[in-house]
Image (cartoon, rainbow, N blue to C red):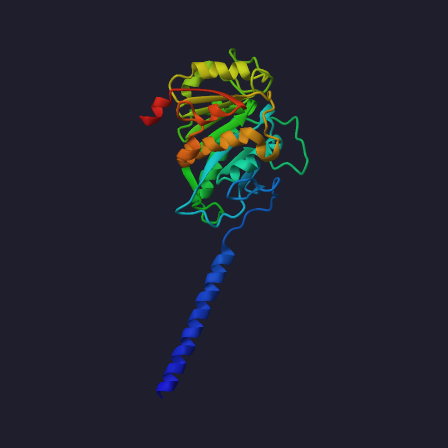
Length: 311
């Protein structure tokens, strides 16, 4: 009699464990997966190999993020970076090496324009600064959407807006957005007179620099960069927030298309790590007297208002 009871108990236990295992597997099977995309280069040099794709619910933009999102959640979250392209292009085709590299260090990058095809160069279509705030809106919404692969994986309180050339002007156009934590203005700067730039460029007046409410990073290509004078003039005018400017003698094109985005990606990623993740080791490139980047033979740097960081 006792043996029968024991056998019956063990049988029920096996069945219960089986049901729990099946339920667990079904739950895992229901976890949303990333849309199909492709790996740029080798996925980047960071700890989280990145992938690039366009989401069908947001096909106006290209997403770069770690290919494996399973480790992100309550304890580890992805800060958000919205990106604007050079020439006001509605495609990040020139910047995919750079953006993939940044994402591989644990960021969600949402770039203006659909994902370019392999080897595709997209010209002629124009983007708008409003697409940067669209990127922020979408990311924040996805973080709250239970059926999204980004559900509860984003740090919606750590948001950067950045861009190159026209994308830098677009960044400055939306810099007053209170959700923004930091901005990056690359190979760019405001014109002294609104309308001086090419048709379609944002008409942002120098007075709007006062709308910046976050630390700002300017990366320029030296005196041969057509945006050099404008960018350096911005730096001189910004006296109310911490601002760092770094010049590398590569001209307007920067290093975005080099392997892993080249030196511009190294510096930009360190800034994002510092500003969005509180990584003080990465911040040493910009802090101290002299700062770490000042020791590089490749870069000429300047900074000011950094005393405001401690307030």
